[in-house]
Amino acid sequence: QAELEESGGGLVQAGASLRLSCAASGRANSPYVMGWFRQAPGKEREFVAATRLRERSTFYADSVKGRFTISGDRSKSTVVLQMSDLRTDDTAVYYCAADKDRTALSGLRAAAVYDYWGQGTQVTVSS
Image 1 (spheres, rainbow, N blue to C red):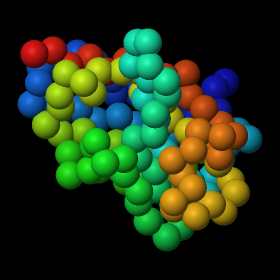
Image 2 (image 1 turned 180 degrees about the vertical axis):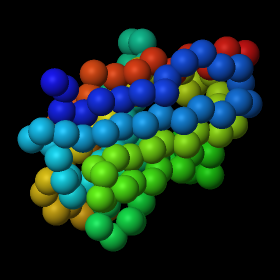
Image 3 (image 1 turned 135 degrees about the vertical axis):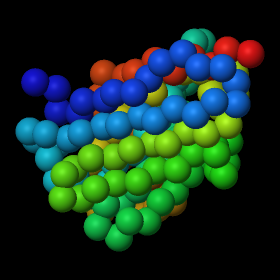
C-alpha cells in the first residue's frame, strides 16, 4: 500500500478549476508537513505549495500564489490542493509529499526535505 495516495488529476481547459487530494498512511501517517510538487515534461520537479498541519501555516510558489489554495487536516493526515484559474503552463504531474520533521516555512520548497512521496497524478490544461 502506498504511503501517500493522490487523487483528482485530469484534463481541463484553461481557466477551469481542479482539486487534488492526498492521504497519508502507514509510515507516513501523522506528518508534520504536507505539500505538493509538480514536474512538467523536460523540466525539473518544482515546489507548488506546502502546509504545516498543526499550525495550519501555508507556503506557496510565486507562480501559483492567489490561484491555488492548500489546506490540510491533521486529524486525517490529508491535504487538498484547490487549483483555480488554471493555465496551460500548470500542466504537469503533481506529486504529494510529506515529512515528519519540523521545518521552517522557508525550507519547505526543497524536495529533499520530504521523506514520503506519492506516485503522482497528471494535470493537463488545454488552451
